[in-house]
Length: 119
Image (cartoon, rainbow, N blue to C red; front, top):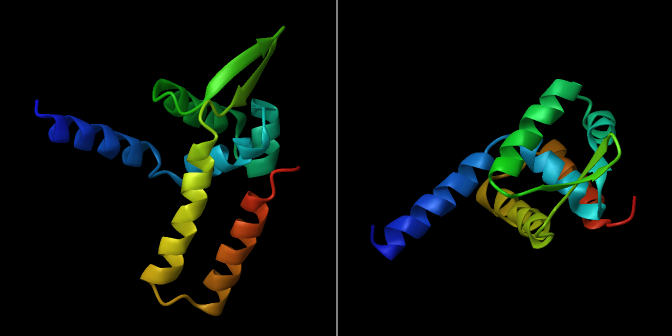
């Protein structure tokens, strides 16, 4: 397979993983550091099994890593720059569509929340 085709496939796979809003949100929640499934469940308001399923996909694509401490499993970003890259995607949302006041406000809130590395 030519190099460009191989790289294009890998990028398409990455974009496929990122095509789910819960997975994008998990990556942004992990931006500030390690969190366990219960912490992600609380932050996101989805089921424990839902969080676990999304983490499984993210782990399979090496976008998150885990650290075990007894019975607890903590997740983190092995490449924190991924969360920064996703945050940059907000510029495309703003520039690509004519945003309603509500969407503009949502984008700004997300930018502020996701830009804050302290929780």
